[in-house]
Every structure is written in C-alpha cells, then in structure tokens.
Length: 154
Image (cartoon, rainbow, N blue to C red; front, top):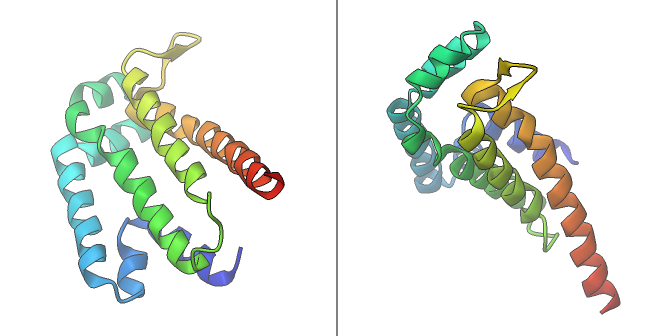
C-alpha cells in the first residue's frame, strides 16, 4: 500500500467524503459527507456509539433507528472503496470485493445486533457490526484471489 492509498483509507475511515475532497472531487465529497451526516443524525448513530463505549448496550440498541442505520455500511464502504480506487488508479479489477463484502457482513451484523449475545453479553449496534469487518475483508480477499486466478488461467 502506497502512502497515498493509506492516507485516503485513513481519511475515509474518519469521514466518508474527505478523500474525495482532497482529490478535488467536490460534488462527490460533499455528497458522501452530506449522506453520512443525514444517516448519522437520523439513525442516532453517535448516541449509539457513545452508549456502546460506556457499556450500555441495551440503551444503545433502544436509541438506534435501524431503518436509517442499515444504509450506513454501504455508504461507508462504498466511499472508502471509491477513495482507495482513485488512489490506486483503478489497477486491480476485483478490488471492490473486500469493500462490498465488508458492507454486506456489517449490514448482517447490524441486523442481528439487537439480539445476538456471546455468553449472555449483548454486543449491540456498534460492536457486533465491527466484529463482522474481518469476515468481510477475508471473504472479499479470498474471492478476489479466486477471480484473479480464474481470469489469469482462463
């Protein structure tokens, strides 16, 4: 990973749309930031984050508007993929797979987050989806390698 790719990924983790602004793609950057703020506010995401960090998972679950928060993983990982792709220069054909699978697994984790427990501990709408990220990355990377080999050998 180059310095530019790493910088874009880290800014995208901080707030979707920042890397696009850095690239001079103002309309796209403002769109991503605007959608992030809209979804964040409508879903009570910051409140859920705060309550989760305080260990108040039941309250975080009750405060979360899941109908809105379900949009967040797709926006978040799409904006991150877009920033990474721009930094990479569109060199790898299946680079979207780890990002897409992260969005999928995090969304599934979010759907189960109000009821899923480990040893009777509710993980809630922040921690369970975060724990799903490595599953998405690994699944996407494996599929990316498989598809690259199929095309190379095919």
